[in-house]
Amino acid sequence: MSDYEFVCFETTDISTRTLQWRVLQDKVDEQGLVFLKKCRSRLQFYQSTLLAWDLVYVNYLDLFEVLSNKNKVSCPMNHELANKNVIELVSLINIRVSNLLNAGTAFFKIVERSIVDADKREKWNSRRRKLHKDSIEYKLCYELRNQIQHVSWAISHLGIETKPEENNMNLYVMLDPKLIPNNNKIIRILNNRDEPICLNRFFTTYTKMISILAGYFFELVSIDDQECLDFILDVRQQLNFRDSMGVVPVNTPDHDIVDKTELLQFEIYDWIVEKLSQINTFAR
Image (tube, rainbow, N blue to C red; front, side):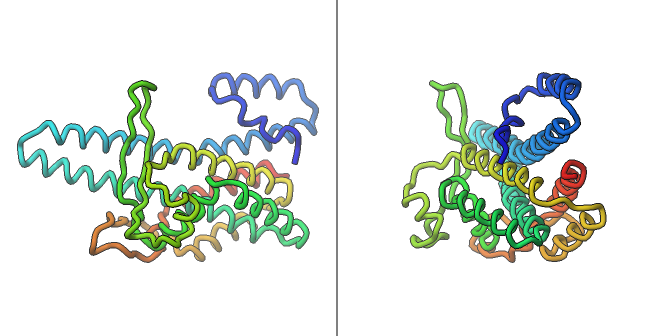
């Protein structure tokens, strides 16, 4: 990979990044401009996926506020409303986290279908295997995604870990041992630890690795408009996308197991369209 692989992650401020982009555009030759466009597309890929995570974070803050206010009110009607809000927020969090994980899967499906050259395919798979071997974040998200496909929410607690001395709050989840056998890969990955797991680090690292793989994909394959359309339709059919948004049940005794297609929301279709559009624009 290029020595400049991480250049697109160095600046996070939007105004500064835009200014730098304009300056660079004026100073590089045609070959350099092609490289910068690829970097820019990788940055867009990274940001769009992180945006999905930011939405989850907002939902967590809303949930935290609802639960805090619930403890301060005495009116039964207000309690009932608060309970309803909690259920809705937890369901929304469930959907969005599932989308974030499944979007990565959808991208990988597209890539694997795109690389027809055996040597290039082996290079791609070798890189993925190395990530899976070397990164606990990648392993956790990979196995958690597989678990979510079969269990509506393999989580016993959703919440926020506050650290007043650091003036910040971290999202956390607790894996439910009753829903996940002790020999499950997730449990082995985490060494059976029962402390809160900070999702920020895991999902941010996982997302960054997906974006790097996306950049590597640009180096391996280029696809045209018709292929874009074919991939979109094929992936949509494979994943059994529905034509309307579904409701994922909160984990209850009556809804422990759901069909994995219930967790594949139509939002991912839009995500795939956007990613393929970027690939089509910048990979030539």
